[in-house]
Amino acid sequence: MADNVAALSVDGKTYELPLTTGTENETAVDISSLRAKSGLITLDQGFKNTGSTKSAITFLDGEKGILRYRGYTIEELAEKSSFLEVSYLLIHGELPTPEQYDKFKKEITVHTLVHEDIKNILDGFPSNAHPMGVLSSLVCSLTAFYPKSLDPNRSTEEVNLSIVRILAKMPTLAAWSYKNEVGHPVNYPDNSLDYCSNFLKMMFALPAEKYEVDPVIADALDKLLILHADHEQNCSTSTVRIVGSSQASLYSSISAGINALWGPLHGGANQAVIEMLEKIKADGGNANKYIEKAKDKDDSFRLMGFGHRVYKNFDPRAKIIKKAADNVLDKLGINDPILEIAKGLEEAALRDDYFVERKLYPNVDFYSGIIYRAMGIPTEMFTVMFALGRLPGWIAQWKEMRENNEPIGRPRQVYTGHNERPYQGIDKR
Ligand code: CMC
Image 1 (cartoon, rainbow, N blue to C red):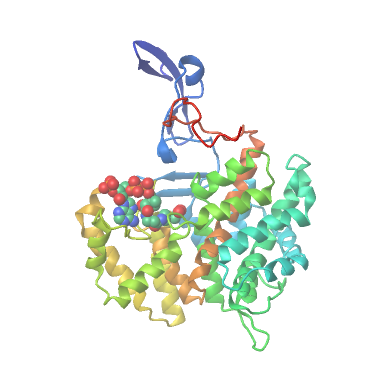
Image 2: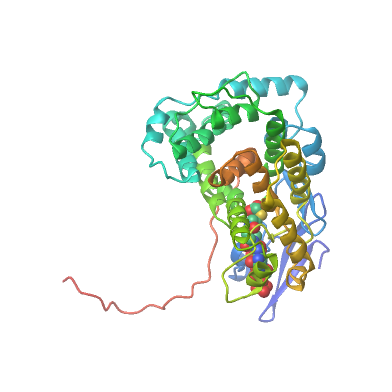
């Protein structure tokens, strides 16, 4: 047998399956020929150990706590880069030259305004609508305003224009989803401001008051967005790729990704963490009580912001965010008792055998909400902030999937229902 094949023996027959190795020496058994050779399929619920694609965008080593975008470490990017530069890197594969960066920034600035009719759609939502539902609907509605975007095969120029438009308009749509919730008039983009400052102004400026963007908040937001920008084949990104694999448009694929992100086991965890910390505070701040609840298999309570499908050592993003939370609260002169509760909970969990044995560590969502709170961002908007950050990653992954001409995503199943049986219902004859 050759070195670069795996052998699978079933009922005395051996099937050879090729191995494929990535640039970081991760090896996979390529089972795509298995069914044709043997009639067998593989089963892996939740895709816990199944690669869905080959990708050159993000590398993640969950055991070593490594995260790199296009080869650059998250630590270095968070310290030295900006969200727009990282967006360019993810989408186009390389860091931009100063000229390329200038052009990219200008293009995005030019497209920040949304069609005035989008306000009519916004007006149709009740004011208690969750901003994530509003955002995904508004993003999908862009297909109506830009019908040429519907066919992703139309031209590279059209696809690039769609990419620029969604990057430019997302802060506007995100801020408007919040304005709808609080019942305030929307603010229009201010193109004299940078990406994050423009978003903050659209979020917080009120007609009757003067609003100045605090650079500490704008910088912290930029760093948070970088940390969220991509995370290889997670639930929402896989959703974007699989929706896009049917040749659906970029806007509808991203809208689907926003919905997948919303759940509390994924991006919605940042909202759930703060709600959990508030609950612990109101209940006297006893971290141990909640650690015990999380360990109790008869109790549905989970320690939100803890655990990760791939990080089994630490989440490098959480390390950076924990430090940033201390820094931002300190600079803004905020003393949030929730931060102390979070640190106490982390310490107690990291000493507890249940969490140690299962390798459960704080993830990106554990401390991010504390920073968002300090910035004045309301809890229901936290996952919208995650979506804003993840956008360039979704775009890059959608673009890569299209450029690689990947086939439509269509998993198989092991059927466990009834065998054929005669009809016994209310016969209409
Ligand atoms: N609290 C208590 N127990 C937990 C937790 C938790 N947060 N997370 C996992 N476990 C236990 C789980 O009960 C299981 O125990 P056992 O082996 O005894 O059955 C074991 O750890 C393995 O967990 P799993 O649910 O099989 O692991 P998974 O890879 O399917 O789920 C997860 C990963 C992130 C959904 C899960 O850890 C979780 O629900 N965490 C809380 C939600 C959260 O913070 N999500 C944000 C993830 S990071 C942001 C993002 O990119 O989405």
